[in-house]
Image 1 (tube, rainbow, N blue to C red):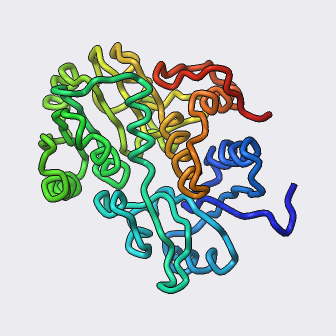
Image 2: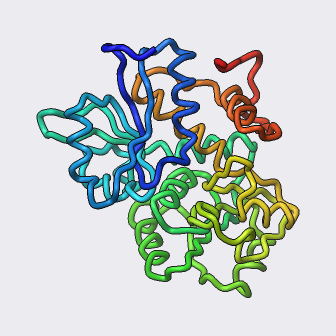
Length: 302
């Protein structure tokens, strides 16, 4: 029920019509009896600088940020230590009137870490192959910094790959990492050796090829930051065909959103296992269970 006291939270991106965030964020508000609503705000890239103070002036309490704005918005906010190291933000709140800027954090890394924990993956001494070199890739690197894994970075743009490697060398000197070219004869043998494959590229975000450009054989796991309502992204489809256990971006989306909710409300995290069940049922998907997310008797609202 919307009334004059209802707080407004939302999502900015371009586009945002496809986003599933309003579905579970509004469920969080209902379950926790918070008088608030979460709505999508389509903001074109050239209008971000005007949109941020405008939304604050309109009384919006908090925002999530999705592509293509995560790195652009970073420069316009007061960031915490996590966001500062990552160089990208996905959660804004607590507008600082004195500095006329939003305060910001990054919960993408928490979302990814939660999925790794949900899969109960031990990465110490293992090889991890990361596809992509943008803001989400930086969040993944932040989550992997103390995992003890050896990370291979593969990206179509050599310049962006090298920029990420320089970022890692500067901010995560303890992380074992190297770059590899976007070439099948190099990538595919390494896939077989890797314990975990991660896709943070935009492949699968829009209509396009039904398969990933590489064979993704191996006995380990594959995590896609991209999600589709049916869960069948090109990366997941290809990795599953190669024998891997696959997880699309829905669990990561839920976990980063739950972390944003907790940050805004300064509260505990909503139940991840129950939220995943709720979302899969809402989307008509077969239920996928992450063992580390099991919870007893937790439910989400209708």
